[in-house]
Length: 179
Image 1 (cartoon, one colour):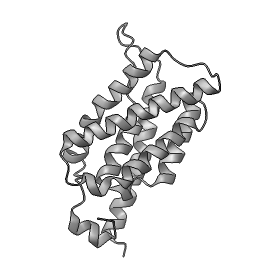
Image 2 (tube, one colour; image 1 turned 180 degrees about the vertical axis):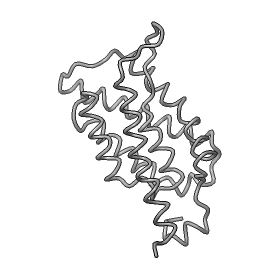
Image 3 (cartoon, helix red, strand yellow; image 1 turned 135 degrees about the vertical axis):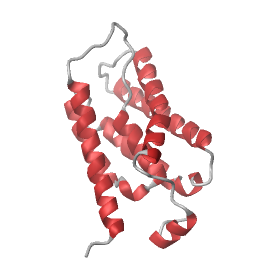
């Protein structure tokens, strides 16, 4: 018989892949609502950040790296740059998960916002070093703002719809996490 915790972990991992596929599908649809120029959020990245700060075992680094590398190819971004920045940011947040268990949501949101902005700055810096064409700074900032604004929505949906809550100290000890 399979352990229920293993089944739940694997179902969330498959759910992350399914979510990434659905988001990618809808981003690729040639739909334009209105004449606005507001770029959409990076929902895959925001969901990975939400889940790594709640249940780090649900989003292993190899899974996120593969999903983000595939997204790099599909969205015609420089292959590997955004996925490498995502892996670095995800591991940074994973290391801070024990301290974020007790912090209020506003502080967590501010920490994630800082990480997202640092990723955008590093991405633009590396692209500038290699003289790669970039989108305008305004679009990059708007994209990061929309991702930052989508973070609380995904956190609430993960909690209310999926029942994902932060790990307690008892569960962390039981599962072998660092306190």
